[in-house]
Amino acid sequence: MLGAEITKASLPVSYADVPQQLQQVEEAISKNPDIIYFLPLAADPSLEVIKAAAEANIPVVSLQEPIDSEYSVTVSHNATLQAMTTGAQVLESMGGEGSVLRGHERK
Image 1 (cartoon, rainbow, N blue to C red):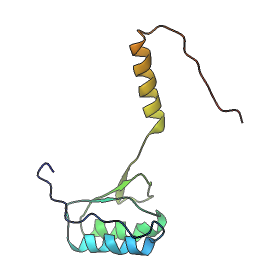
Image 2: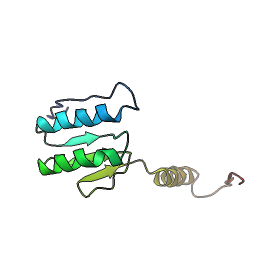
Image 3: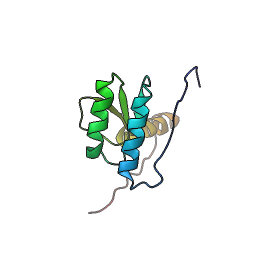
């Protein structure tokens, strides 16, 4: 994959098994990778392994789940941006003119 070597890609047996996931991250840290991409099952329990990775000079990228840590960055889906981009493309395809129906949920 573009010259990258993936040394380990794993998921816990259960999406509820946070301890197993943390153990997997600890194993990854012991292999001293250049970077760890991490989809945490739970943010707060992940803080210690993320700090351990930082102490080993391994950057951590959290996918989807924001982690309140100075030692990682989070890459997440931006639904508002996606909707605005799609809307702009639709309006552009209409030549900037036409009728648009706006729907919203009643609360």
